[in-house]
Image (cartoon, rainbow, N blue to C red; front, side, top):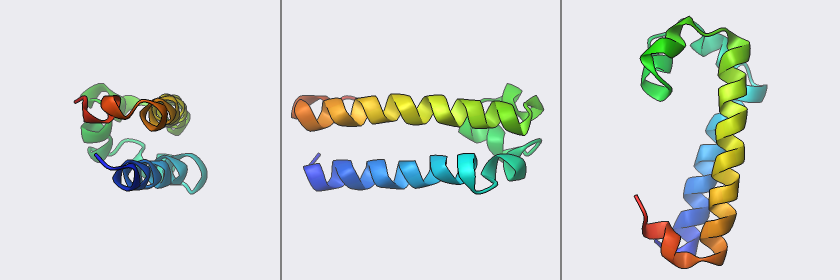
Length: 79
């Protein structure tokens, strides 16, 4: 995967997590069947705060993986 594609995928993912954290996405997803596909079927019972916590943790992990991918290009091809 090229660096530009790697950055683009990370930016799109970051927009999604930012929507959940800051723009009311967690409230919109709370109790929805859509959250079951994003997280897990058990997440349909989570509160908006639980969804926000999950989004924050995922964003942190993806940021770490993004930086590793910038420094070590071979990890961009891992599934």
